Figure 1 (cartoon, rainbow, N blue to C red):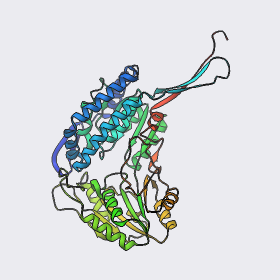
Figure 2 (tube, rainbow, N blue to C red):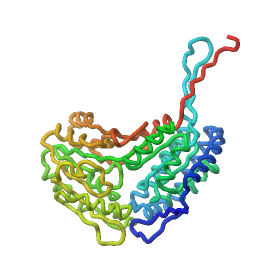
Figure 3 (cartoon, helix red, strand yellow):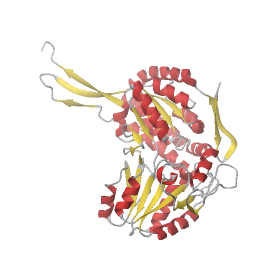
Length: 451
């Protein structure tokens, strides 16, 4: 039997968690049990579901220190960010514990005598395929609304986040079989898509596209949140010191392992000054042990990820970093690059690591064209003191999220989240948009008896 093993990226000898892979039959059986649990859960009423989610939030809060330490150990996330993720996880559960009381339908004027109304109902079993970089928050911002609206959940986490997923399932203390974890890889993910009633995926564009195609073939509603090649446009009137601090944190914090991380900085005039400010900001970042509160840049998740990040700088001029760090674990220095040839990976694709490219634009039009000239469209940022210019530029950017004088990273769980082009497929997730995804609408028409 295959065994899924999760190791600490800062100490690869440390096995954080291990479990037998579920296998295809194991996933199918988990969905079968979840379907039986879902019928009971949906019948428990809004107040019962709200109380259960509130208790889950309280359990997360009561174990916040333990959970943050586990995120640091298993995902290599700097402890300050790990604590923030735990707090956000609690807030997500509390938010959806109240959203269960939102309207579930509407009354309409009937065409004749009688009554016409719509009513939302749960889809059934939600299959969630989640990554390792937000090992608590991403599973919960999918699972909490699914549960709130009456669905059961079967979670297939990344093998790198197995320990967090298993501990989360224990802490939530939901009714038996309502929230299950199925360890595994691609085979288990494929089996989940085939067996469940609705699918939510976060991960790479290649896998997300395969999940979306498989779900369509199975007739299953799906959403896929994928990569980003996110640009920050810096206009000549921007406050460069503030911009550099924000961009450095957004590009290199957590070793750049966020789909919303800044991958490119596009300087409209003043490129030399922008580079100088960024290099100075990078020098202030704490790099090293993620359990140290002063660390902003910890390890990459594994050796292959570290090597890809270092290799991506080749072919350009390295302004800072560009090397692996000579220490235990999978560390790379925050790397700033410019002067790459056309078609270079840093200008076109997502490199999931602490690597950022500086590009120059002679005009705002050229900057917008550069920002939009990639296959992704997740998030972009515009830095300027001119509000009219900020609104004009932001309206022209082909991304699902646009930040003005704010970093590309950071997502509010009560607002819709998603991108354009190869960054997203299907409906938005989070906020009020989640109800639309995890429920279907039934139309009911009632005529008078004997009418």
